[in-house]
Image (cartoon, rainbow, N blue to C red; front, side, top):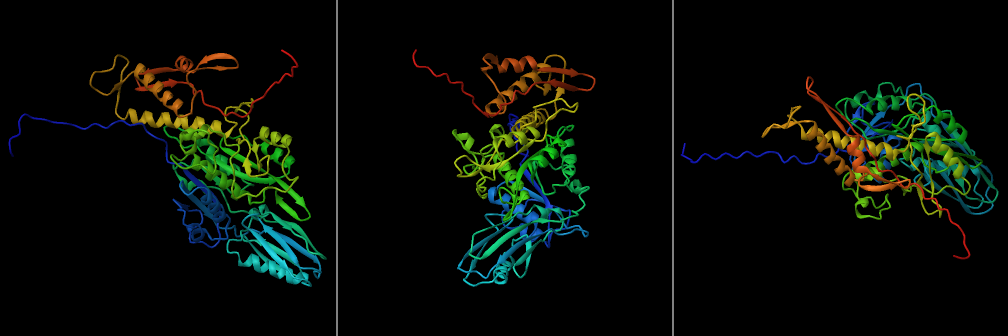
Length: 518
């Protein structure tokens, strides 16, 4: 070996860069039809390539939900669990009744099955067409739609639509008809009688320790399976597994309030659709299948939380950094989030302001049109969490932003702590020179650095300001609340700290005094 003097050795040490958050992942759970996927299996990383139609059947509930999620979000990883119909399941049915006739003029009738935008069937009517001919035309239009979630059959103008997926899902499909042709009448019988969903016990077993920050859930009659999975994951030892489940349910105000009274989870976000029940309209006031609405919102939330994504369609940004996804978006309000594929409700079909407040207090939130009627937007988005385990009123996790902001603050600290101290010694004395060691003071200093990082990411409050007219120094308050204690026997530090999270600007109240002179 050639001589090489003097001896020179150089070791490269890792830079110790800041650790980020766990990659955002969304899980969608619902019923399939005739796809290639095996019922109950976890299908991972479903790309934005329409592969969901092959996996689950293009006329299935779960394919429709994934399709909507991908319309809004082509970036975030989406996984799915498709389930076969229960063999004992019963399919829901509804009816379009086309009466009178024959038509005494030419015109057009419009029929909607589940979606005002995507499942609209315009049926031209010629002068002297009878109701059988009109019904046959409607059946032909529905049959030609490969993504329709119903089949249709006509008997003398009575068009019966039957949900393709058996079970209660079909009951959630709204029906509506508009248009007028002289001497022809139309009426709607709501989808009903769907019964017996797939067995859901253990549906999440295939997930293992994978984390899903959001889950879109089809099964309105079994929310316990969802919360029983998510709630224990909210605080777990030595891991971050928490997430939020999203459901959308159509019902009357009274029924919503009753159902919400029995829910109390920071892991469940419940969108309350208003039930419309008129001669020509039976279904949610925003005419889209509730499961599809839940998947759409979950996808928007996931997009906001995915680093560097463009948010121009979904976020009103007055500052440059808010126009792109990332950790800082967790503290930005969800209200006023637009839904580009949802149509405005008919006049008079919206919740009132009083009803919206009642639902919010009960743990539900609404999607409705904005004041000018130019878009459909989210109201204040809450979880069903209302009280602590002792039943005391507790606002800590009432708003989804509170949950999301607190969660990412914890995750940032956990991930960076693990990255900073992979093989360190613990000492009760001074730091040991030139070796990896930590004591109470160095741990406290590191936590203060992370708190400062979180402040720059709009997760926690910092600096000197005022609350209720009183001056507050948040950095000082953080330091005063922070304690670090070493147990030298176990080699473990215990840290007690406070996250002064950033909250949302949800309102400004003005008191204006009228004056005629100074």
